Length: 406
Ligand code: PLP
Image (cartoon, rainbow, N blue to C red; front, side, top):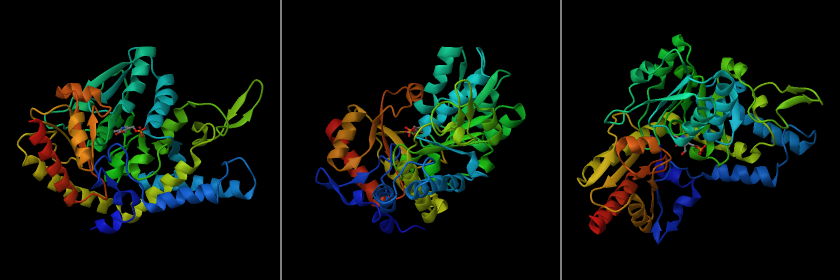
């Protein structure tokens, strides 16, 4: 069991006030706060150890390169990748999925080929595939969720045809908290020769992830949700898929030799990392992942399960509140509307006055919102440092909204 007060003490921002009230930060699905060890690592990387990576032979460049490259192994351990060579650094999930769209899918797909998506995807796992639809005539095949917000893995597999070139699914919905059984999807897709891309942006924050066990081909994570800096991220790419990929961006670092008439690329994974990378961001992400593994991913999952159950019970007690998605195994992410209330933005504004930070809107998941017949919801998303007392603060603030608007 984690000592949540000891965890909270490591996050300086959690002791601040917002609008005269203690901060109740429930917008972790959008981005998480940073522990002191990450802030210290960033400070040290700039103040004492900064230089460009892979380029110079001087001392600082060597230190910077070692710190930066060391994170590849940390990411591999964090997501269970068999080797750090299977890890490509990115600026976040969005870049990771675009890398797969341009580097792997585009050269391998033609008009009429299909990609299977769930209706729950974040725009980061939709828009790159719309590019292929618009530019190449690729067809997007959508798989709906059921009334509980669950995605039936068999329905995903049933959507596969002879023209399917890729399945791209989230591991955890950023709107409903639904956890998708990606292992079953990967198991069913493999004999049919269809690779699976998993958007791990949310799941990797809340549960232990093992890409080897999942059997996926691509697994994207984003550093700023993992208690690390924004502008950092990584994607696991199965070596067979990596061998099939062409580079997406060209520039320094991803090449070995450049001549007038010829270019020879670096070996993967660096072949897919052009230009000066997010050096300090990546080093900061490494510190964040080490911190999470130090706390223990199973312990984090256990703590958040308790929060989820407590929050669900308390939210269920408000008979004027409509919580979207009743999936049994969901994570601690709740999207809701209030009967008769004004727009979700108004609810969020009232909550903010009480120091409660939530997100309001479409959550970059418009197809899901359309599927649910909604234009906007409020979303409370929990993290490792949240407490039951904060659930109570949320409930009190929601009751105030109900009094004001209903
Ligand atoms: N996928 C999911 C499920 C997300 O929740 C997010 C971020 O909100 C993303 C992708 C995009 O991540 P980023 O903006 O860090 O690239």
